[in-house]
Image 1 (cartoon, rainbow, N blue to C red):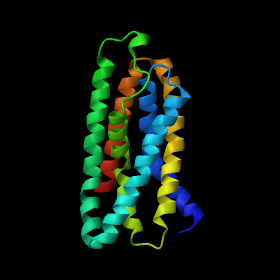
Image 2 (image 1 turned 90 degrees about the horizontal axis):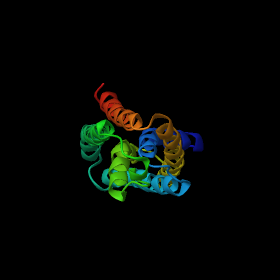
Image 3 (image 1 turned 120 degrees about the horizontal axis):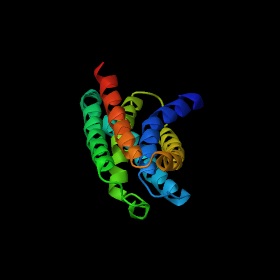
Image 4 (image 1 turned 30 degrees about the horizontal axis):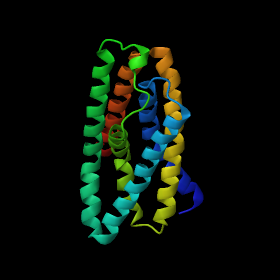
Length: 191
């Protein structure tokens, strides 16, 4: 696999995390660059680990079983997690507007980790596929993690601008975006 292929895989794996990061940035009170970098790091590390897990499962178990098992369930898990997170954001968006001082300045590690995991399940399936190819999984995983780190950091800062422009409605839009990402992942795998 050449550099261009690895870069395209890394970019493709980071797009849903980018969309999720926009909604996370919009829900914060003036997120700073340090929070964007923290969020990017959490997403990037998780996105880099999941293809390694998929590759390891495929390499150290019966390859056809692992491939079949992960590809049968990855889209349902991602859809369910993103649907739950999206519905929660929509619910929060319909709650009475909080004064600007009460909006959080950062998200909890667990919320970010769950969102990152939900958007990286497809990377696990990619890891399974890469076990069948002649590819350095560590370089590919690092590229996916770096691309995700970069895209999520940008996404959080972009979400900050959108949050300022649209206020409470940005949480509703963010929740709808998460549900749309989950629905797209489900549709892509079912069709």
